[in-house]
Length: 175
Image 1 (cartoon, rainbow, N blue to C red):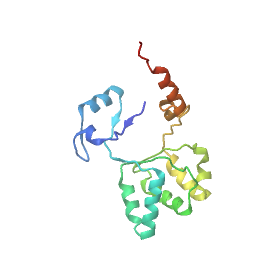
Image 2: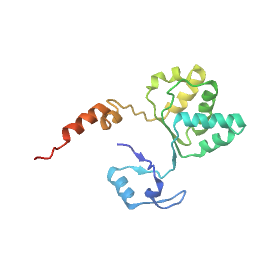
Image 3: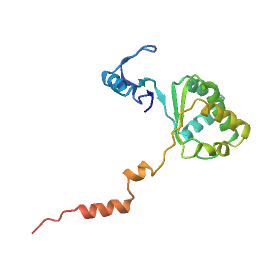
């Protein structure tokens, strides 16, 4: 059981907003007490890795890279989805290192990926930068490795299976 929960919709979790002592919705408060955990009403930022990379590349091209990097360093919980699905370019490596360095031991960073951590060096590329990035990410981290079939496969069967289920579930009117 986790010790902290970060709701993805803070408007439903917080009754009265305050940076240092917000009032939680009674339902969230009861949930936290029941499971013996804390609720951190932070606003997570959840970009896909490819979208974040494009955003940073555009900022790099127009000379305003420091602005999105500063914004990312202030976000309470940064969730990067589908991280390192393809090998990182030199510029992406530097930017990821910069993000990790700015957030290290001050803000929470969550990475989701299809790749195991053991392949991190391979996807990052440069061994020195990879060591720096992974050291900042893995130090004090909670790793959760999922096993089993994809939930998408379980909840969305292939089209052929859907057709056969529909064909079997039709009820013909009796004459």
